[in-house]
Amino acid sequence: MSRIAVYPGSFDPLTRGHLDIIQRAARIFDHVIVGVSNNSAKKHVFSVSERIEMVEEAIRGLPNVDVDTFAGLLVDYVKRKKARVLIRGLRVVSDMDYEFQLASFNRRLNKEVETVFLMPDDQHTYLASSMVREIARLGAGTEPFVTPFVARRLKLKFGAKK
Image (cartoon, rainbow, N blue to C red; front, top):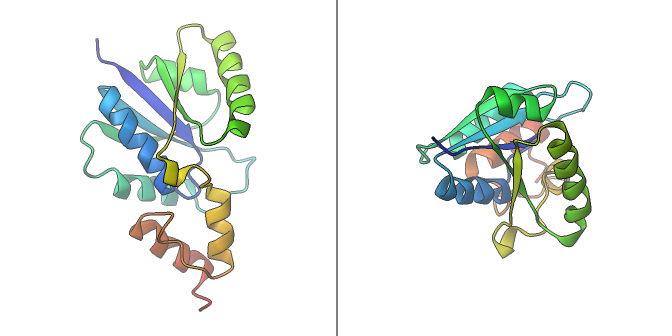
């Protein structure tokens, strides 16, 4: 039986921290699905197709990783994909309360799904998509925080102010 894991998120945009978690998960699991959420109630900077494109570009060298989109209950999506593991990234202690709540709810919804928490490399501990969007909006370079492809997409989206 193949060990399939789903790493869900909005990835708006994909950061080097997200990519670090994807790479770590790819070393542990046979197949990793990066699930880009399609939640119309949330206001995203990038469309679902743009976010998928950014993830696809970043995972090109990872043969056991692919990207998909999902809407609705995450545990239902995991079941449809015949996965049994959810990957969640933990950056700082403040993430733990929220992530543990999610893991608990997901377990109550489907006892077959386990949540595995992975920590990114120390250099990505405080990295968040919201911060990347803000510095891009203010015209600062995002290259230390995202891949070159994502940095170009951010410049196109927000315009170069420098």
